[in-house]
Structure formats: C-alpha cells, structure tokens
Image 1: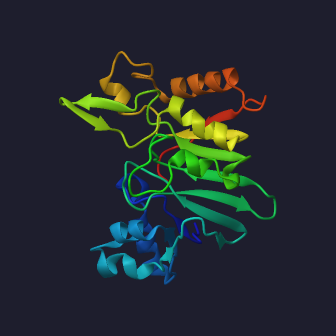
Image 2: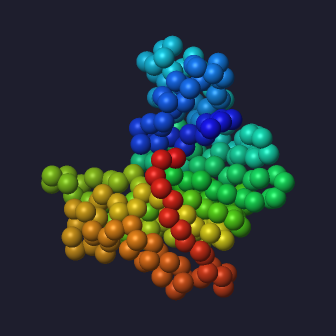
Length: 231
C-alpha cells in the first residue's frame, strides 16, 4: 500500500492507533508522510515520541476554514467540538475532477453545544454553505438518543452526538448518502430502558434507514450505510 498523507480528525487513541505502523514503514522506505491536523492534535499525538515517530512525518497545520490540497482532493477543515477537547476538526472534501463532495465528522458533540473557548456551535459550522449538498456525510452515532448518563452515581457528558440529535447535522448538510460510525454506543448499554439498548450493528442500520425514510430532506430520502470506526 502507498500513503500520500494522513488526515487526523483528533488525537484520541482509537483514531490514531495506526500512525506508529506508518512511522515504521516510513523508516524502512525513507519516505516522509505529511499529517494534516490541528496544531493541538499534533502536539498531543507526537509529544514525547521523539525520533521513534515524529522524525518520519512532515507536519502540516490546518487553519480553521483554510483549504489545502492532497492530489486532486481539496480539503477544508473546520474546528468542531468534542466535549471541549482541543484540536478536533471536521473536514469538507471535494474531488476536483468529479466534483464529488464529502464531509467527515468523527467524534463531535451535540449540535447546539457551544463551549466557552469556541465562537460557534457544531451546528453553526454545519450550516455553512461549504457543508451543503454533500454527496456523502460520515458522522458518528454513539448512541440512539442518550446525550448524558449516570455512571457510578456521577452525571457525565458523552462528548458525542446521538443519532436523533445528530439528524440535525444531516438536515443541515442535505447529503445524498449518510455513513454512520461509532455504532452500538456505550452509554445506551448502561440504560436498559433506552431505545437502542443492546442493539447489534445491523439493528442500528435498520432503525437509521427507517428514520431516514420517515423524515425525507427536501422531499428526498437519504441513503444510510455503516462505516467502521477509526478515523
């Protein structure tokens, strides 16, 4: 396989665990790989790694709303909130030869949440013209409807959106196809009375497709597919 660049949405381990393998490959091939991400994410990913990882990557910082190119693809990153954690980005991607537009939004909080350090909510970002009429929107569905839960007697935010609230992102983007990830969310597993408790992935997709059929956007049904975690 051949890799032109890395596109990191944020620095959590379940989204970057393959970068060490790429570093090993780069060391043996003498090819440096540019990671595109928010500067805060870069600091988290590569801090303390020293020569074992960082020396094999040419970091490219992403400015909020500033487009960049990788081959025939143009990416425009926008900072989005993931429970106030620094350096989380969503990306609008357009393939220049075909005009196909894709929006990647892994691990984002509820649509209306606006943390103090940000000048907009996630939904504000998704309502930009850049996001509209996407051919593909990939977004998480960590739970079906739970946004906060009680664990060991403590109220705790999820830092993720749920499918029903996240449908607002779909309404804003108006995509042809919706890809959902983070299925069978953890929080529903501690709330047996909640819709979504214990669902296998197939049930999630069935329910999501039924919801899309019952709530067409601009008179058109959005096609729903499953995307696996790891971006």
